[in-house]
Amino acid sequence: MASIDYESKIPNNVDLSSDRRLKRALEHWLPNYIDWWKEMGPTEFNDKEVFLRTAVSVDSEGWAQFGHVKMPDYRWGIFLAEPEKNRKIGFGDHAGEDAWQQVPGEYRNWLRRIIVTQADTEPASVEQQRLLAHTAPSLYDMRNLFQVNVEEGRHLWAMVYLLQTYFGKDGREEAEELLDRRSGNPDHPRILGTFNEPIKSWLDYFCFTMFTDRDGKFQLLSLAESGFDPLARTCRFMLTEEAHHMFVGQTGLGRVIQRCAEIMKQHPDDDPRTHGVMDLPMIQKYISFWSSSSNDLYGAEISSNSANFFGSSLKGRAWEMKNYEEHSALEQTKEVTVWEDGKLVTEQVPLRNAMNEVLREDYIDDNQKGINYWNNILDKNGIEFRLRLPHRRFNRNIGSFAVSHFDIDGNPLSAEEWEKRKDEWLPDDSDRAYVTSLMSQCTEPGKFANWIAPPPKGINSQSLDFDYVRL
Ligand SMILES: [Fe+2]
Ligand SMILES: [Fe+2]
Image (cartoon, rainbow, N blue to C red; front, side, top):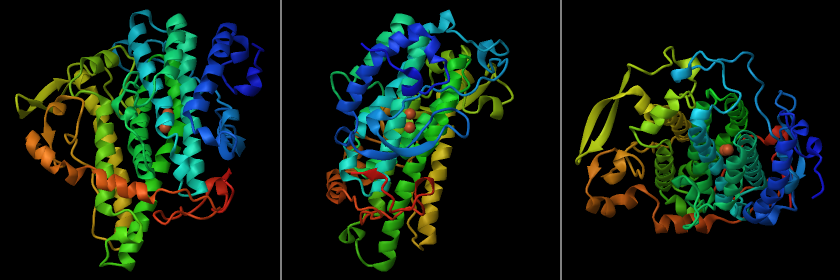
């Protein structure tokens, strides 16, 4: 095939033009990626111009350039955060050694698994979100959806760059596999459960970007500490983009809540559904579903993998160097509650084996800030209802609590009681049908669907009636 002008097509700071082997690998992968995007991305919008930010370098000038672009022409750059001079490994058994610039042979398989697991979530989320633009509540929201989509695509590029550069033939095979698995496909699913859940509505979408992209934030934070320097630098740059994804979720749901609160104020005696908005108890159910599903992404409470990944200096804690003084995590324990022989048991676990739980706790604390933000909106509107996070034992499919059932406060339930009561806490068919009934596309510039309040301001200082997507 004709050679590709990498400098213009793939903005990068990894000296792509001088790496012939990598160029060849990308030459092979790029057309397959574009085919995947055209098949599994937001298919019917590929010829529309979208007001997107593109990273063309990692400095403050270059990382967010705005302009109208057709999505397949988006410049999927490969960027690593600037290297830290003489960086040393900060934690685990290799603390104090020089950070690795090549894959350490003894950890090759673990490292590949870590990268592939992260990489797989990126195309998965694009697949999960591919039909949402058809019911976008405004051009502003549609544009934000597409921004998230192209950046998840770029995150896939970032991970594929690592696989192709550092893992030889295995890495190239993994890169192909990443384009073959499909979210929700029973025969060939994506690796992690949450990334096979359908995102059927914008309420699901806002919950996903709030809770599941936030899992991404914490995974990236822990990998940003990695002793394998190219991975650390890649993740540091990805985190700058991730912030926008969570903004979409937190403020998106905030606007849904704001709209509901307005209706409740105007019509205190009416069921908000009679006015065509989402009601708070149902919003709570969606929060409970997506936050509990995302809790699973951290893995089992007690885990030998987590001990291996930390001990081998591949995956640290979030803000490892900033928040902790002791970085070996040896000779320390953590109190962990698990479900054993039909009862709750609290154990002292070697800290390395409890790293999944450490990361999950940081994540849950961060989620709580979002809940507080939403409750503040209710408070300002004089509404007494309060949203909450479910207990971490609620609705789990991974870890020790997966074998039993727990209510929203974490109290054990029999299978029978769970079946009887689960619709109190999780969206049921009638909730989903109601949400679906509200979903219809609103494309007049500056207009918003009835069920969502407008945002306080537009993107990159543009007005709300700006043509964020040229349909
Ligand atoms: Fe991502
Ligand atoms: Fe994301």
